[in-house]
Image (tube, rainbow, N blue to C red; front, side):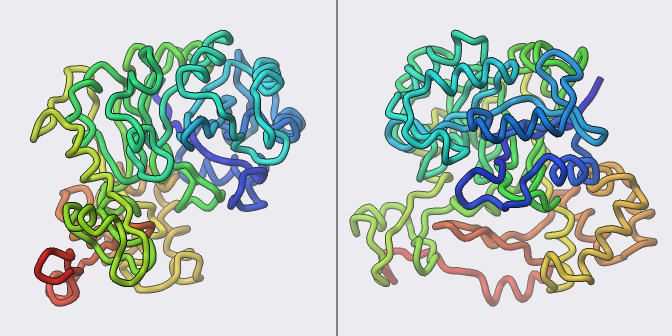
Length: 395
């Protein structure tokens, strides 16, 4: 069976997460999105595990179900050097045991626990319990594994189960790094709210023998991911090297010569695009035969918001979004599967935007420094307002 899965989200117990990140809110929104399998996130937090047990049924091995979605226990851990690791856990009993063993002062407070263990030590701990592990948003400049290491093996010492790409990278960028040719790539949302423009903004289409932890493990280890879906990477807020205060894009070599300080007084952060170029082995992607396609898309509400210049949560945007979801069954079906002619009958302008994504003809002002990139459907306006990258001539 084919399922759409998002393994990396957070609960109401994580810092900067919405208090609405509860099973009763997440599951119905996931159904509207078109997701049938979700990671719970925050799977080492005792109170969150209690909420999961109270609001789901243990329907299969390692699977906790509602009428709208199936969940598998997952967590993100912040290890040594502030590197984030994503872990998929066999069941709640094991999650509680790992939580007890993990040396962490805040594991009962924050859904994303912090520990002084390094990547290899975390791997050894969770592998005792048959968990799956890989770097979360591997290339991001604040908490990605490659911010501190030039090789994934320097971090973990052994081969991990997957690499999560993050919002500012895609398969084609990652496949310029030779050592990643043997790894399964996951694309997940890292959602902190249940809104469909956050939940499942990146997801994986995978083939499972059945809905169980064993099938998830088999699919990841045997590369049964059929497609990765996610943002155009230059929409990611850390794609380009940029100032974290004024968000100006800065040539990376100039940034280094300025000791990563911007003229405005802000700090410059190295972009994912440049970081990958530093560790890459090829100018073009060298994808292995098993590598599935990476399909670029954008959350439907954000697409409608861009087309009409209205806020994502405004009535205008939400009404159009609801019409499309009602017509095609889910947001994912509207974005990927619906005939453009059928979308046109509901909204001509949105149909053109969806078609541009499908044809890979969108125009993007890239993000960086913590600011998301922007879609622009008016090429003339884009030419006039295009942001300039600071170089030697204007730094």
